[in-house]
Length: 537
Image (cartoon, rainbow, N blue to C red; front, side, top):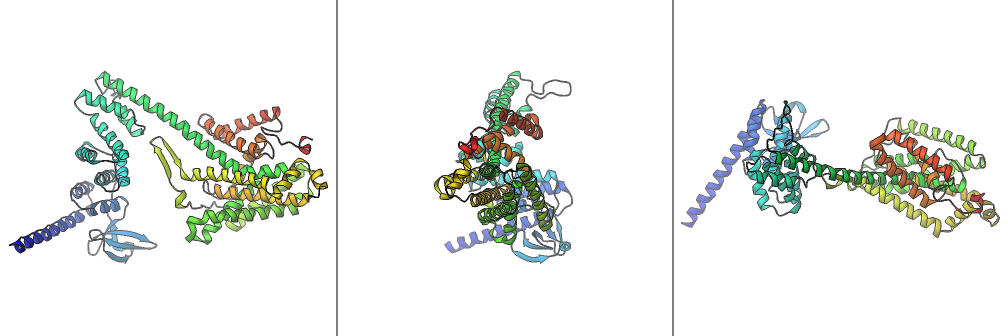
C-alpha cells in the first residue's frame, strides 16, 4: 500500500514537472512574437510561475541577451565573445556552443516592456533570501510600481524583518495609501512620506497639489493639500541640507587633490625659490605611469594603483632631478629666466607624451575596491574613489612631515630653507640638497598624478588644469609651510565648491584668484609664514 502511494506521488511530481516545463516552453515560444502587447502578457504569465529561473530569463531579456535560434527556434541566452555568441538554453541553462550573429535573432523590447520587466523582476525578488537583493528590489519598486502589485507588497512587508527593506516597503505602502478612500489613512500616508528624502516621493506628493488646465486643484480636500505641501517643504529643506553636506565633501575632495598637487610645489618653491611651471607635467607623468602599468599588466588591475604609487614617485622624481641638474641649477637667482625655462620644459614634456602616446586622452581603469559609492540616504551619496583620495592625500602629508622632521635629509632641507649661506658654511652640500629636494617635490607630484588618473582622463594637458591652482594654494597657505598648504588647499577647495552653484566654475575661480590677490596684499607671506633669517630677508 505504501509503495503504491509513493509511486503515485512520484508520478504526480514527474507529471507536474513535465507540465511545468511544457508551459514554460510555450511561453518562451510566445516571446518570439513581434507584438509587444503579446510579450507584455507573456511576462505577466511568466511571473505567475513558481520557478527561480524566471527571474534569470526576465533579467536576460531586460539586458538584451535573450535570443532564439533561427534554425531550431530554441530560446537561448546569448553572450557575445568577440565576433561570436556563446549560447545557453534559456530553460535548462545547458551550453549550446558558439554561433555567428546571423544564426540567432534577438527578442526585442521597447521602453514600456523594460519598465514592466524591471517592476516584475523587483516584485519577484521581494521574497529573495538575500536582504541586499530584497532591498534593491524594493527600491526598484519604489520607482516603478502599480496598484496591481499591492498584495505582494503587503505580503512582503508582513514577512520582512530587515529594517532597511521594511522602510522602503513602508514608503511604497504609504504611496499606495495616497489613493485610499479613508481620509485618515491618506493623512497618515502623507505624514510618513514627509520623512522620506527621495525625489520620487516629492513627485507623488506634487500630484496632490497639482492643478488642471482650468487652474482648479485636482485634489478637492484642502486638508490633504495642506498636509502634502508641508510634507514637500519638509523633504526639500532636508534635501537642501544634505546638498550642503555633499558640497562640503566635494570641497574636501577637491582640496585633497589640490593638496597633492601643491605639496611638492610647496617644498621646491619654499626651499629653492624656484617657480616651476613644469610641476603640472610631473603630475602628468605620474598619471601616464599608472596607464602604462595597467596596459602592461592587465591581470593586476586590482593592485595597479598600489604598484603605480612608488613607480610614479621614482619616474617623476628622476625627471625632476634631471631637470634641476641640467637646467635650473644654472639659473638660481634669476626667477624670470627660471619661469621661462620651466615653462619651455613643460611644453617639451607635453610634446614627448603626445609623440609616445598620441594626443588622445587615455582612460585609466578604476579597481573594483575603489568603485561604487556609499549611499547614505536618497539625498546623499559619497563615492569611494574620492574618500580614498582624501585619506591618501592626508597620509602623504603626514608621511612628508615625518620625513622632514625625523630624517637627516629633512633636517638639512629645513636648514637650507631657513638660512642657505649658514647651512653651506656648516658643511651642507646645498647643491645636492637642491637636487634631492626638487626630485622629492617632483616625485610627490607624480603620486598626485596617480590619484588624478582616477578622477579624470589622462592626457598631455592634465597638469595644466592644476598648476595655477597649486601656486594659489602655496602662496595663500605660506610658501614652504606644509600646514599652510593643507589649510590653503582645503579652504580653496571648499570655497570653490560652495561658490560654483551660484557663480559657475569659471567665475568661481576668478573670484578666488581676486580674493588671494587682495589677501596677499595684506599678508604677503601667506597664512603661515616660514621663520628664518633668509626667509625674513
